[in-house]
Every structure is written in structure tokens, then in C-alpha cells.
Image (cartoon, rainbow, N blue to C red; front, side, top):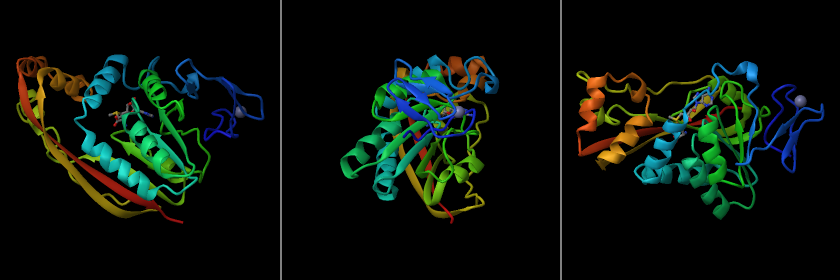
Length: 273
Ligand SMILES: C[S@@+](CC[C@H](N)C(=O)[O-])C[C@H]1O[C@@H](n2cnc3c(N)ncnc32)[C@H](O)[C@@H]1O
Ligand SMILES: [Zn+2]
């Protein structure tokens, strides 16, 4: 039995070889890379929603450079601590699967059994995620309409992806854990100082969400000494790439090395019964 449900009738999907099927007869092919498209065409807002191919490639190169490995290590420890044996993990907005892959490895090494899945609205990103974690399940879908049964997920990760709190509440089991990674005030501040005349700092909020209780807020920070290649990949994987004026981009292209702060907050919640 798959962790995924049919986007048309919401019944569970069963994987048979290279096809997912529900008992109503709706079926979905598994792609060459190993993911399934569960985003109905009428729910797409554009032909290729989410991060495009170039953005996904920049993020994959930057993350594979290991710069954010302190965050990956922190998320892996949390996954081992909060995932019950036999539980189900969902990476909502998993992107290229860098964190998903790390979490798969530590769970495989520490749990008797578990199931792991990732969804993202970007096909380009998901292709990479599915290749990275051949034993996981990956679907093109929106976080705002997860193709996942209610009360089925033990541990849900949202790392820098849109927050769909109502869907997360629906799919998490009572007692399940939700990990939400957000940027802290000084995250990438040196990069923003190059790009903008008046850079702003991110706000730092501890927001209470109905149906959840806070377990912890974990800071993860460090300084990265980036050469121009890594710096440009970092720029192109962020939303700054969409909204920076030309002069800001030119200033960045002239920089050969920059020390850049990474500063994350990992908010950890429990889904109340
Ligand atoms: C900043 S990236 C983070 C990716 C990954 N979690 C990571 O940290 O490497 C945000 C991701 O959210 C995805 N995304 C944007 N809107 C989405 C939606 N409505 N549903 C699912 N994914 C979405 C993008 O395609 C992108 O892969
Ligand atoms: Zn169906």
C-alpha cells in the first residue's frame, strides 16, 4: 500500500509495478525517474509550477557542496528522535531531496521499518529527489492539497516551503511531529547587503497554530566562506533571484569571495490529539 491517495477520489493508491491504481480504476504512471504525477492538470496555475529547472539545479549544486550540512545533521537527529518504528515520514515541498535523502539514510540505519515520501509542485526538483532516494515515494502535488490520507503521517518536514498548516494538521496523526524550518533574522544578511541598498532582516516569530503545541525552537547557524560559483548558486536558489534589480545582480557577479551567515530556526510542534 502506498502513502499516497488518488487525487480524484481520495481512495488509497496501490502500486503495481510502474503504475499506481485506486479501487475506482484511476491510474497514474510512475516516471522514468521514479516519481508519480498526482497534480491534476486543472489545478496547475502554470505549465511548470514551482521552482524551474535552472533554480532546482542551482539548489542541488549548492546543497551538494555541503554548506547547509549543519542543518541537514540537525534534521537527521530530530528525525531519529521523533520518528516511531514503523512510522511514515512526509517531506512537504521536498525540492531536490537533499534533506529527504539524509533523513532516509539515518532512518534506514536506526529503525526496523518506516515509510518515506516527498511531494513538490516542481517536476524538475522532484525528478532529482526521486533519483536520490530510489526507495522513497515521490509525487508531484501541492502542499495545499496533499494526496495523503488523514491521520497517516508520523513526522512531517517543511523546510523553506509554503506553509499549508491546515493540510499538515489533517495528515498528521495525533501525537505526530511537525518540523518547520524558517530563516532567522540574519540569515544570508551579507548576500542581501550586496544585492540591496536597504536590506531587511527576517522577522523572528513563534506563531502558535491551532491543533499544535510547541515542543522546541532549535537555532542552527554558521558562517560560510563562499567563492563566486557557490555565491551565485545560492542567489539563484532563493526568491531574491526573482526580485533583485539589475544593479544588485551586477554587484554580486563582481564579488569573488564572501563570508555569508546561515541562520535557521527549526520550529518543532506536536499535533494535539
Ligand atoms: C525553497 S525550496 C525548498 C526545497 C527543499 N525543502 C529544500 O530545503 O531544499 C521551496 C520548494 O517549494 C516548492 N513549492 C512551491 N510551491 C509549492 C506548493 N504549492 N506545493 C508544493 N511545493 C511547492 C518549490 O517547487 C520548491 O521546491
Ligand atoms: Zn481514484
